[in-house]
Length: 279
Image 1 (cartoon, helix red, strand yellow):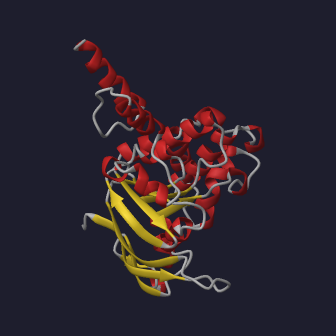
Image 2 (tube, rainbow, N blue to C red):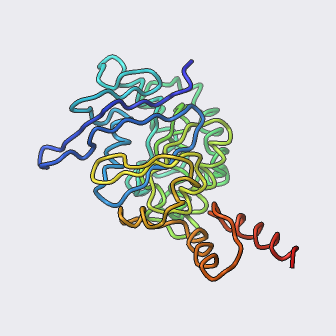
């Protein structure tokens, strides 16, 4: 079994109404079990990228391999979409039933999973996203974060190897964003491969690898510490660093002896406590 579960080789894709490539000669890999963030301004190509991984659209040139299967091979199309589940931005557009349990069952019913297997899968999926107590609730009575967790449960019930999130927290309030992101991080800790499309720098900072797209191209890849080390370079692509990284930069400019690589509140707390201990 290959360590690389997603491989893109010199991939291009252009929408018919556009004069330029939405994805322009992109090559990248995602390792099995990794949580990978993809950043970029609107129109950078990141949403198109995950649709290519899922096989919702096919490259004009180049190759996309999802769990070893070529997305352009017709005989693999349904296998790829089952292996790589996708959660979109608006939770209301993903819920189709009047009861949470029925909504989670929807994908199973449409892929011919035996009815005798469904209850176990549904219960396990709801438990994984901490929504068991809401199984008989109407989705329209849930908060935005809860709705998105139900959408995730519907994908989990399909037992994918990969989950693709296309700005899944963009329309949520801060509490809902935290609920959903922590749910996804836990799934990743348990072995799920995650591709996380976002414009929230603090979310990307908690992933293992960060890719930055700009004008359809992949312009930078690395660990969060590597990618967020140069604020000026990021600003050229109309991006910023995580809030704690920006604060650390300002404090260093004011003479506070903080090291590079601070990305989170936990990082900042640890380094400030270390400084205080030496006063």
